[in-house]
Length: 180
Length: 226
Image (cartoon, rainbow over all chains, first blue to last red):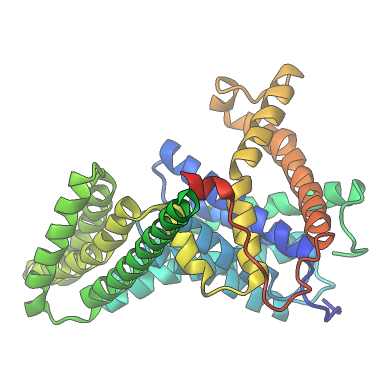
């Protein structure tokens, strides 16, 4: 968080690989389960891995933007250009919330809060579409709440997996940071 | 004579490539405009828009696309929205809810059409025109590494199965074993990704990547001779 150097090529490549893996796994899971909200599980997991490994502002946004571009290029989902927004919006929200959180906070709690923040933004994108389509505000709010509940469960699950993964990566001496 | 013939063929090939890319950029623009129209147009103008989308659907179906996913999405959205409208506002507002769902479906159809008609790598090429060099390289590298990554994941999965991890499709029916999938497959994959990104960065930088202001693009000779 303290370094101000531009993102190195290695870090950018790692972000890109994470984004591609996220999109590929989302596409694969969509075939198996018809459950809405499960994409939040992978999304929060991979974004938080990027946050933990790189540990700087903008890493999650970069991951989200690349995931959106890759999803469009691979033709995952039916959204067309909307899919870019679906991946990027939660990432931007998580990055902004990560700025506000104190670094002294327990990593587990930070991950869960960030995951839920991303989920709220993810549901917000659906709500935004509905508002633009002219849906009544009460209906939008109820649908938004349902999406937050469903997505929040999966996002928390994904976020809780991140701290043990980071510890394991640290044990393999693959992170060049001392503290998360 | 032979050389000029080859050059002509290469030129024709290049102009064909350019035309395809321009066509893809235009269809991307069309999709954005049509999706935006579905939200902003007044209800009276939705019918002509539906006609336009109908043409897209016919074209997509002729290209052997499956519309089932869009239909399912529409049906789920319709049932949730209409039941909420019924509970909150009563029967007289049902038509309003139906219009809203129609707008959402009309905004989805152009995206579905784009996924079927435009080749994915073509969309990537159009998008990379807007990206900085480094990120365009990252996107291209990740896309071309996808088959390698899939092989790597399959290999790790099979090795862990041989070592007795409870991650075979039969064992995964029990949710208790799902955490094992994360520890046995996802951990090694992430470690592999970190190592791979380090190797690729070193390989690119030892070829002076990022030093020149305007990078050169190397076209494979194989493409020209096709």
